[in-house]
Image 1 (cartoon, helix red, strand yellow):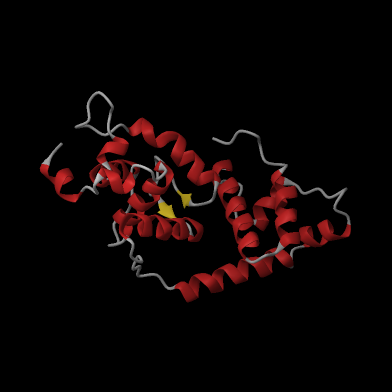
Image 2 (spheres, one colour):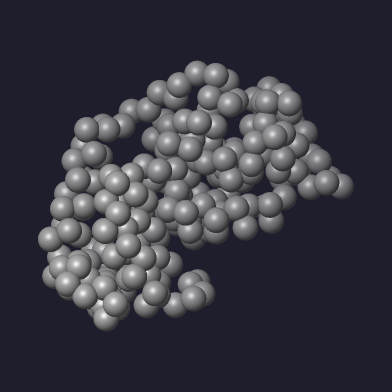
Amino acid sequence: MDDYCEANAFPEEKYKSIPKENLILFGIYSVTKNGEGCSFERLVKECFTLFPKAFAFSRYPEWPDSLKFDRQMRTLRERGWIVGGAKTTISLTKFGGKITEETEQMLAGSKLTREVNQKHLRGADTALIHSLRESAAFKRFLENKERFSITEMELRALLRCTLETPPRVLKQNLQYSKNLASDYDERELFNFLEACEKILPTKVA
C-alpha cells in the first residue's frame, strides 16, 4: 500500500462493521465535497484510500478490487441513493446524503459540513410532489385503483424523462419519487408510484 493510502485511511476498526454500500456513499461525498466530479475510477481510488481493508483484493491487499463495487452500486441506484454509473459521473441524492451523514457519524462522531442549499432542495422536492399530485394519472388512480393503468410515455412525462432517457434512469427517477413520497408521508402518492412501477421492465440495464 502506498504512503497516500496509509496516511489517509481510517483505522479498520472504525469501518469493518459498516456495510460497503455506506462506505461507498461516504466515498462519493469525499470526492465531491470540494467540487470534483466523481467518476467510477475516482470512486474506487477514494474508497480504497479511505477503507483499504474493505476494498482490496484478498490475495493482493496493495491493490483495489473494483468488483467489490458492482453489486453495491446497483443496490444504491435501486434504492435511489445515488445517480450515475460507470460511464457517467456519480452523485448522491438527497436520500443518499442522509445515509452519508449517518455513516460519517459512525466513522467520526461529527456532522458533515456541505456547501448545499438545503432550502432550494426542499423547494424543488415540494414542487415535484405537487406536480405528481396534480397529474391526470394520479387523479385516475384515486378514482379507480383496481383498474388503473398508465402508458410508458405518460410515465416518462410524469417523471420528467424523454424518449431518449435510458430505462435505468427512468427507474432511478421513479425510486427517488417513491422515497420522496415516503419522506413527505404521502401514502396515496406512494401507492400510486408503486402501481406505476409495474409497467417497468423487470430487468433494467
